[in-house]
Length: 276
Picture (tube, one colour):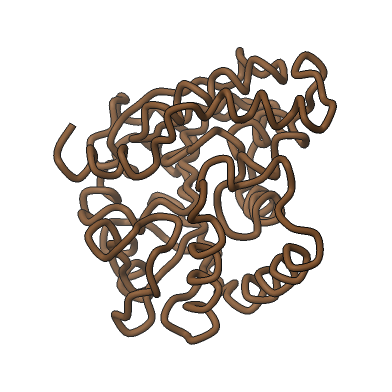
């Protein structure tokens, strides 16, 4: 693991994350032996708009039950479990954070998806998979932690089958600006490698990908932040939520992310690209 990957691993690691999940579900009176995929969604969909964004992206992706899917930057496996449960496909999750991979595997066992999901630690620019292994590569909120964009795209193209598909939901810079820090992916600029949306699109096209969907979801994301902020102000944080991962910096990080979107420093996009 290089120094960048090690720093990202440290940024996201919690240390007692599985125990936090167990205590949270005990507090709300839910036995882990009877949990469903949706019960985990408030805490395991670690990206803006949560499950809603995952559902939208999945509808655009054209997933079929026989697909082998790779989820790069899978986090705790929320998207992977949703795809496996809804579409019957097999999803392999990859994340640089060792604790996330371990907890993701355990959570899949809790909800009976241990055979249709698997997780392993690895680097997005050095994927530990064979050429042409996957029908679809999925990614939500990972590109901001990757400085080598061309290496990232090249690895995705390598592991995709001919006419395979890359789908993503991510945060991009507007005119090279940085967000207000801290944000969920970085305490400061050292681990934040945002690029502009047009630059990303040009890089994908020059690598041999063709866009079928390319849409700015910033307005919807801002509305989501406003609704979440109002709910938190009224009721406080839920027992099961992203604070299990983010800890005491949860509110400052979310406020800065929402503020940066409103001030047009950053924007959110969804993309679906086919390998030509």
